[in-house]
Amino acid sequence: MKITAIICEYNPLTNGHAEHLKRAKEETGADTILCVMSGSFTQRGDAAIADKYMRAEQAIYAGADIVVELPTIYAISPADNFAYGAIKTISAFPDVHYLSFGSECGDADLIYKLAKLLAEEPEELSSYIKKHLDMGIVFPKARALAVNDYVEAHEEYKGIENLLESPNNILGISYAIAIIKAGLDIKLHTIKREGGDFDSTDITAPLPSSSAVRNAFAKGDLNSIKNAVPESVMGMLSIIKPQRDALGDMTLFKIKSISGYELEKYYDVTGGVHNRLKIAAQNASTIEEMLESAKTKAYTMARLKRICLYALFDITKENYAECVKCPPYVQILALRSTRKDILSALSMGCKNVLTRYSDVNKVDKSLRYMIKLDFTAQGTLDIINRNNVYNKKMLLI
Image (cartoon, rainbow, N blue to C red; front, top):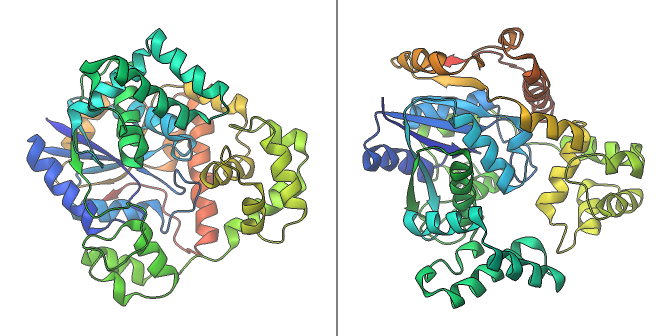
């Protein structure tokens, strides 16, 4: 078996994603496409547009052979931990030869070169990073500036400067760092993203982004979506309802109802952000008002939304540290019916495989918190999306 893995959200799956699935299989020579997909909530702290099983089904229709869930604890994490969790999940599978992803630069060698530098972080690079941090620059920007400083002093690294200024490059670099640190023999395959901003809401672009599709869907403009997604995804969108403000109401209530001391215990709450959120919440009647009031250069909108989810699901710093120590597990959302051989191969190398919720009793006990969180998140999304179908087992397609 020769597996190519793809880390994704498919929120929802677009024609661009379908093209990526096709090219990833062809260009890597894979006989199996594994998708590790975020479940009920996304890396930016938003609720998924549709249930994870529905989105996994669309991935199979578009060319994937198996879709597994990226554990919620990692799916709603900052880029480095998002990547760590995804690669940890992939490590449970045998014969993964490639990881495929989209990037602005389209050069896997350059991405790996920078990832290796950042993973090793020589003392000189560390000193450049510290210099920029001491100037009050936030870490992501400080690291990017430090890399440019390093390249100026080391001609052999020319070409990697500015890679950290583009979001998909950053994710690809995070994946590569996680692969290097895990000691996995997985090659990188990347496809250059065309058409400008991946987060653009322009539904008329040649390959509109998921953001554009979600924006049009929220407005009820289904006609404009038809040329942006596969026909089966259009069918999925036609039977789900645009999201209400339920998530915002839930999270705003949670932030208002707890003390600053309690909020400070949650994961990624540092530097007084709990105080900013509490003050903002006191004077806000909507989640948007609270987030806008609390937002700064250091505390981006995405980070604040994730912190709100950590509060909503009671994910403390201690909880997170324990989860990182846990072995990988594989929760299968969907499988191509002709590829049951993947299950046989997986079960030989991984003891913690779930095809239904009741399997939680069969896996390592240390994983129960994480798995329960996955299903709690699914139940929460069902409330947000007013979904009456609560699936608890793998789809065979």
